[in-house]
Length: 226
Image (cartoon, rainbow, N blue to C red; front, side, top):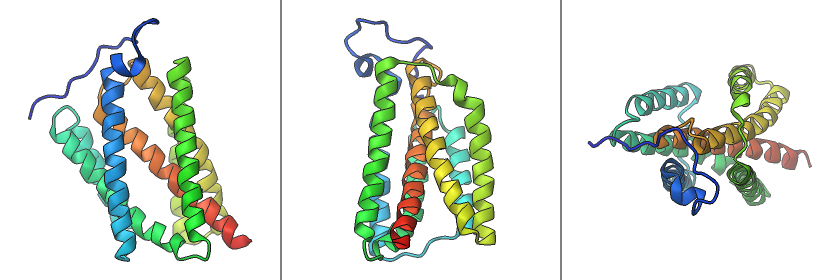
């Protein structure tokens, strides 16, 4: 399949028609991100409606990292786009049973809608800020890598050792970390540090996915506590 086109490492100068019109990577990223979000949401809705079982933590990790590896290897060809849909579709399937669980609660619909609204507000607000100011958030890279690694390992510990307090702390940490990742990746795209829209889409999709599930956990716990 033909190679994906990327842009040179420069930023559209002031006075150009618009950032979205001139920056091909950004336009392609947002177009692919929109399609994968709709695709993943549709699969999640079907999984929740059909009450499909969750694949479990081990299969989830194997599927996620396996498909992420495939996407990384194929990122410079058209097959990379196919791999992105496979990855986001799989993530949508794992999300379905989680959403179904919260929908089964007394005020579950309100919790899910609040998590969706919060996720959209955070993503649009942070993205809009970077697109408007074009500020460089590259300095967050090292902190985000370390923070996500620690939070990921802590999250596994909370699952295997059944520690609710630790799980809540991890969810709160992931909200902050994913917000930082949105700033970081959007800044990289705008400033020419990321020239492959397939990988940019994966990073932003994972940020939105983790942001939503973390908010869902926090809001769901608060609702149950009431």
